[in-house]
Every structure is written in C-alpha cells, then in structure tokens.
Image 1 (cartoon, rainbow, N blue to C red):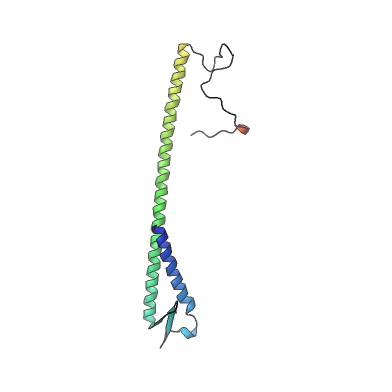
Image 2: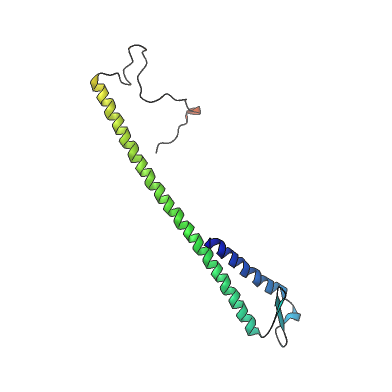
Length: 149
C-alpha cells in the first residue's frame, strides 16, 4: 500500500514538473517584468523567486514519493528474507524428521532380522522374490529421480 501511494505521489510530481518545463519554453514565457508561468491552465504571475519556491515544493513532494517507494521496497525485501529464513528452518526440521524415520525403519528391520522374519536379502519361500518394505512404484523415465533433501 505504501509502495503504491509513493508511486502515485512520485508520478504526479514528475508530471507537474515536466508540464511546467515543457509548457513554458521559449522567449515569450520569461519571468521578467510582467512574466507569466502556467501549469495545466493555471497562470502564476510573480517573480522568479516564487517560481523557484514552487519548484522546491514539487521537488519535496517528489522526494516524499520516492521515500515511500523505497520504504515499501525495503519492507517487501525484509519480508522475503524472513520467508527464506523460515523456509531454511523448515527444511532442516524436515531433514531431521526424515533421519529419525530412517533410524526407526532401520531399528525395525534389525528387530525383524533378529526375530527370524525374512528381510530384503532373503527370498520368500513361496515366491522366491525378495521382501521389501518400500511400495513398488512406476520406474522413472531415463532413470531420473528427484534429489534427496
């Protein structure tokens, strides 16, 4: 929201500044004696100092808009950095859970091997096929597999 508001203010200040520069060019628009300056049909009669003051106000508004844009960009960058940190934390936690699960599976397999149940290395008596706990899935094309975490 701050970013959008800053962009609107900055664009408005740039448009007013450019309209003042391009709309009042040439010798007929000098601010000398009786000079006239106009922006969007609004005529300003006065001195060069009042025009300079108007330019300072437009520049200050543009600076305010730019400041709001930068604050919005900084806030979004800070949020994305925090999201990356949280993603790294959750990946580390998932890796720890996967290691614990693998340790439990290994303990279960060791317990089965000690109890006399067939393991993956020993074929089953009735079929002669090795025993595996992993579900049989479809093979990957070209042998590609997803990378481990």
